[in-house]
Amino acid sequence: MGFEGADPGTVRPGGRTARVRESVLRAAGDALAEQGFARLDLADVARRAEVGKTTVYRRWGTVTGLVADLLLDMAEQSLPRTETGSLLGDLTANARLVQRTLADPRQGALFKAVIAAATCEAKTAEALHRFYDIRVNEWAPCVQQAIDRGEVPEGTDVHEVVRAVSAPLYYRLLTSGERLDEAAADRAATAAAAAARAGAYLRGDAGRA
Image 1 (cartoon, rainbow, N blue to C red):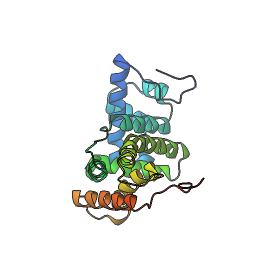
Image 2 (image 1 turned 180 degrees about the vertical axis):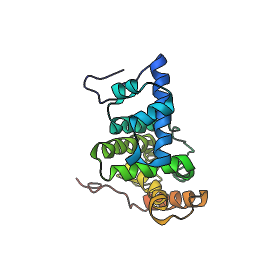
Image 3 (image 1 turned 60 degrees about the horizontal axis):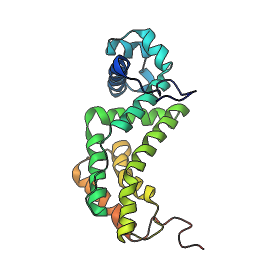
Image 4 (image 1 turned 60 degrees about the vertical axis):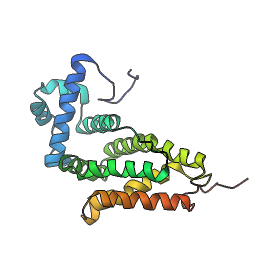
């Protein structure tokens, strides 16, 4: 279903159009991972996807429009949340999913390129923020269920807990260069769960009349 005034690349297609979109987004992801945002070129993406340049220019219009659609597709294609029955189990599943994604040579390079572009390109930043909003909202119910079970205090900010799981993993990817393995994922999940149980993520208005 499309929306009037939607940005280029945001209307969901079907049939042949869907196949073209899939090919172009895959090609765009490959190009980003290989050479970064600064060298991303719509004509090169069209060549890689084996589609006409006019098709790519007409549908996406700009590099930022293409990247926005790529991030939307990545968010929608990501695996759904895992519910294990415990906060630690759920957060560990989330952390390991993030770890596998960032440790993948192609995906890790792709995220580095997009994050770097987002620091100086407003539309790419907006698209990246939407991507993370979708993913955080997907996993937030796991924390709400932990609140309902009494594992963590009422008033816990469910979104902050989910963000706290992936933050150390992105730090390793972008800053420290330390190994991104399952042990790092498990530590991030354990720390976030312990902090949540201790009330570290209580909202500022929690407990107020």
